Length: 207
Length: 207
Image 1: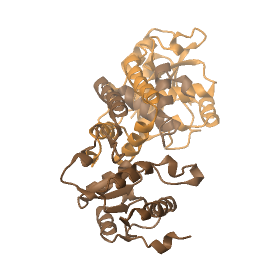
Image 2: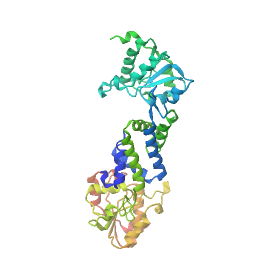
Image 3: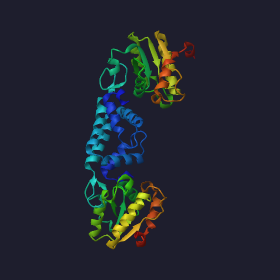
Image 4: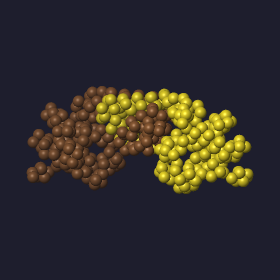
């Protein structure tokens, strides 16, 4: 269908349609919009794409996306290094920081255990978390994965894995609505969930 | 909110959020997706953006978007130069061509008369249409603007403007659903609408 467009427009439509949630109609609409915009604006978008893709890396410590290693949070000496909040995605760090109540560090797994999608523990950044804990400064790991099936499974897996290490393992409280997404939680709900965190019963881990 | 992201990611989110229909949440989701994709894929998108923006121009004759002037359709000697189909947008040309029944030429107005949005006849490519008709080869102008208030107003305006020129002026039939959008019409509906086109009564033009 795109072949009735000028080749350069057809090519742009094809590339835009590869984005998640962007169908052919949306890609066409975006392309029509973009070719009408001032050249400087389109250049700014192209530059931002290349810069973000080339510059962004994983923080060697917390695995969050960052332009500099260590990331701003890991490099901040005012943060409480005895606490690590484990989340699935960088957007979850943003949600936590927006709350302005948590002063510990993070660990970004970049996914959740999901056998349906072929994602097991080895696909997540769990080894790096173990290494950080073994360095000895960590006293508490807060499991802040989404309150979904995958998030719960990942939290349970980590609780079992970390329990021999002699640190507190907590789970953010179910102040979050069931089946919800941490990334979209409002600040108050998230704050309550953090406040109400409780140790994971070791009983629960025996199966 | 974006400021909790790495600066390069925040910048990308900001640029993406400028796109029509893309809110902050969608921009964040797209940015998170893009920084995880292979660099070659992101480069392909950036290249397509720049190429389309820099290469695309208006065909000097029909005003459609094209990489070469005259455009492929205007340069095609097998097309019927005695007919011009007037549409509002390049996407409408795509819809017409997809039908594979029309062999005449096009004229793209790049908009519709819309006093609410401050778009009058001078903002559209109407002068270029008059020049084409004055060259003398045109026998019929098919007004194929959307069957909406703006599309009808534009068609009526053009019918009145062109009626002294002694050519047939037709309007695509109301086979299109009222209030619909030509761009999204299915081929059969569009073919019926083209087939059922009828001369605009000169009576109607007197107000």
